[in-house]
Image (cartoon, rainbow, N blue to C red; front, top):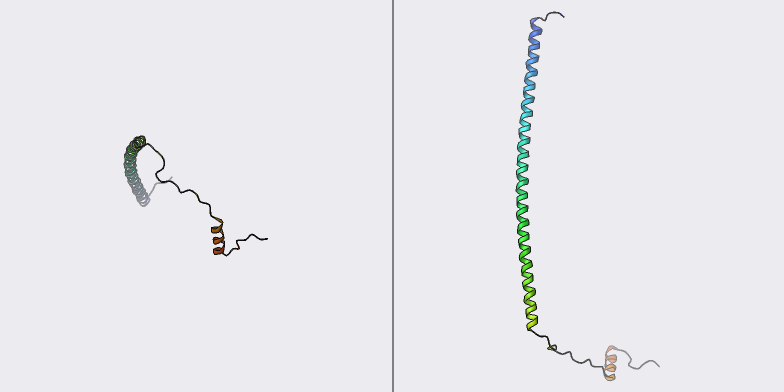
Amino acid sequence: MGRLDSQQVDRRELELSLREAELSRREARIVRLAREQSAHHDRRERQLDRREQALAALAGELAAERERLTALRAQLLDEMRRLEQRHVRSEPRWYAAPASEASPAEDGWWAKVLGRDPRPPA
């Protein structure tokens, strides 16, 4: 190998400095992207934590509401039983009218009104 002249040395130094600058830019970009990704991950974690807390609070409210409704239902059933025991059921208050059979005269009148011959076919 021969000796390098000053121009070749300068060119190699320039290439090395350009490579170092490029590597430095890439490294800075990687660090920035890693920071952004970490910040995004942290934000996402906080959102998930808030959602989990909200769901846990809602589940507690629903359980309490269910207990209140169950207690209210039990009270209503007890009240209905007490009222039923107090009020002895007897005969119905209103009686149904006896079924009346239509007289043959009424049958004939209805047949006339409806346009039917009351006499059976011979």
